[in-house]
Image (cartoon, helix red, strand yellow):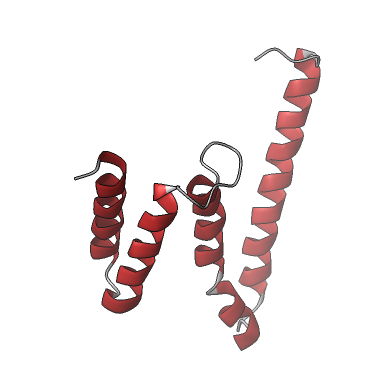
Length: 111
């Protein structure tokens, strides 16, 4: 994909973002290395980071696979609902994945 920016600008942005990312990660390592006990509120808040990241990564692919939000007629939404129900009742990752994929394939290919 061609851009209007020159190679020096693109490399400059990539290096700046790399340094910023490293700085953010290093600051947390440094911060938690200096703190003997992490407060309970921070520990409780950090428990929700993985589910929030997972939802942020998967929700656009489920709700808007073509770029526009599509709820009705979208088999991915129905499969996600089935997977969420299985996860809620069974609490097993493998069963959740299998149920979600089975529902998706059944709806997509009409088994």
